[in-house]
Length: 324
Ligand SMILES: O=C(COP(=O)(O)O)[C@H](O)[C@H](O)COP(=O)(O)O
Image (cartoon, rainbow, N blue to C red):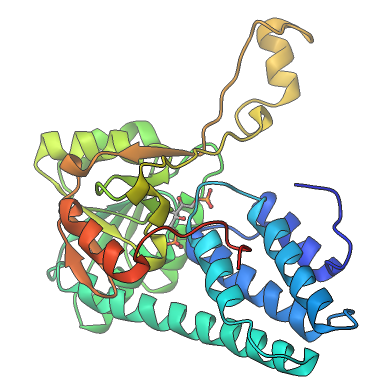
C-alpha cells in the first residue's frame, strides 16, 4: 500500500488495511466493502469543489486497489462506481457516486442469489459436495439447494495456511448441513464419496482458467482423475476483462509467517538463514479442461465459452479503475 493520500478519508484507509490484512476477505465481500468505502468517501468528503472531489475519489479507489492483486472483483467494483460519478456540482457528484455504489452493492447481492438458484439445479437430493476455502458464491448454491428441500452433505477442506475452511464449515453447520472437516492432504481419499467439487473464484480468465485459493488446481486435477464433477460458482464480477487482451492474472504472494512462525523458522534453520526460502502463494490457476461448469448469475457455461459473456459485459479494453 502507498503512504496516506491527501484527501483519502481515514475510513477508506481503514477498509484498505482490513482488506490487505484479510479481516475483509473473499472476492465478493472485498468488492462490496470497496464500493461501500467509495460511498463513504463521497458522503464524508472534505473536498471544496467538484475537481477536488473527483481527485479524492480516484485516490480512494487507488488506495483500495493496491491492497490485494488477484481478485478482479475489486477493480471491477471500483471501475463501476467511478463510472457512475457524474454531475457538475459537488452535491450532484456526491449523490451520483453514493447512488452508484448502492446500486452496485444491491446488484452484487442479487447476482449471488440468482447464481445460487442456478447452481442449486446441479445438486441432487443427497449429494455430497467438497469445498475448498470459503466462497460465498459457492455456498449460495448449497443454500439454494437446501431451500429447495434437498439434503446436501459437505466435505470441507481445511485450506491451509489460513484455514478459511473453518469459516465454510461454520456457515454450513448453521444451515444444518452435515460437515466432515478434513486436512487438505486427505482430499483424494474423500473424493471417493464426493459428487461435486464446489469452489468459488477470485478471477476467471478469457480462456476459462479459474484463479482461486491455492490448492484449487490440485483438487480439480484429482477430481477429474476420480471422475468427480468440478463446479465453479462465480458472479460475472469475477470475469477478468484484461485477460481478453493477453494480460495474465497476478498471483498474490503473502508473508511467510502465515506458513511458519518465526520460532518454527528458527528451529528449522537458525535465525538468519537467508538460504531457507518459504513461499506462500495465495492463489493458483486451474486450467479450463479440469472444470466442468462455471455457474454465474447469467447461467452456467463450459469454461471455454466464458469469453463470449466477457465480451458482452466488458466490450474491449478497460484501463485502470480510476482512469476516466
Ligand atoms: O479464494 C477465495 C478467498 O481467498 P481469500 O481468503 O485469500 O480472500 C474464495 O474462494 C474466492 O474469493 C471466492 O469467494 P466469494 O465467492 O465469497 O467471492
